[in-house]
Length: 288
Length: 158
Image (cartoon, rainbow over all chains, first blue to last red; front, side):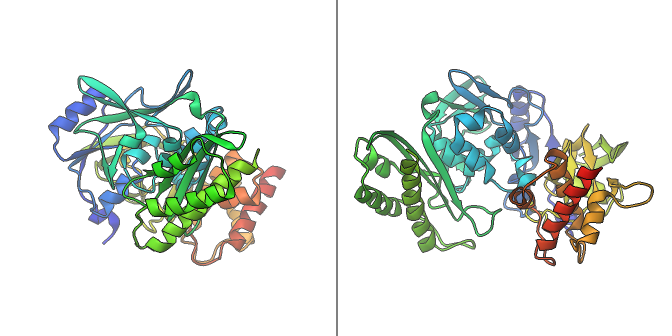
């Protein structure tokens, strides 16, 4: 039978406001919000998810757009392509641009959104790693209120965010501390378009030989996109020598808990994370 | 749950009544009878279902039908050359061995069109990057890359 015939049935709504979206969410238990749909439609097709209704956020105003000011705001419904094509964003945060360019394929990037990439809560989410090292904050809204939390608190497990029922991620906010910082994103896939086998993002703020601030994040090697806080502590206010880098590499490998699955083995993933941490640091230091 | 959706398809306004769980590919191949768009995987990985929506290549197998309202869609059937001939991109694929079984071809050609429409002079790296989401089991991709280069050169002459 074709996919068309096997596709689960669901209702599809296009609310024109957050209030309408929240109402629909209340009215239809078992409904899910849909952004670009490039993850969710696959889950529905494979019956991993069987929502009774999909509530599209595409027609809700105020969820797209990138504002550059004292802080930088990225609307959750911004497509990956629009993020890449933004005339200023990539220049301010090259690591985010690098990650976005490695997400999926052209076709996927034209439809997938930053918010969707995050809310899917996959440990391999490409934009998550870059946003984590940039100390991004997630802006969440629900009826009667809103909150802003560090992105590092957003991910609770594979497919599980900290959002409470009905809450919507409306955007990401970035401070200026990441602007101009040396940072790099690295991703290993089996082929060019792939979910990562292992990935890493590193940001370093150096003062001569001493590291003033370090951010390390690893993907696909833990239940969530993972900040490597032990490695960060190792680096901060330390002189970065060859030995320090080797220590960081070992520590990174000890900090992660990869699994073996169809894409790769736990051992290989662990190895790659270590290699990426080392290469990333060496690359960032050599550019001086 | 049914709705009538109205959009522009290959330059003409169309109106289709469809159900909430249908995808763009279902609407194109079913009620609209345009079977040039192929379903290879249904998961947005192979690109055989690629169509162009508002100038951008998308996987029609993941695109909810209800979201196509008001949009501008180009399928492989929408490509035409002068008179009854194939379009420049299609001719380039034919002449450079970019087609064997032909199943990936509509998607390849539309991804190529989307690329060349926005970047008429792509490097080989850019071509490979643009086609990352289009899989081919027959050609080994070499002739496809050459076809794209030939198409770019031919379009520049026009």
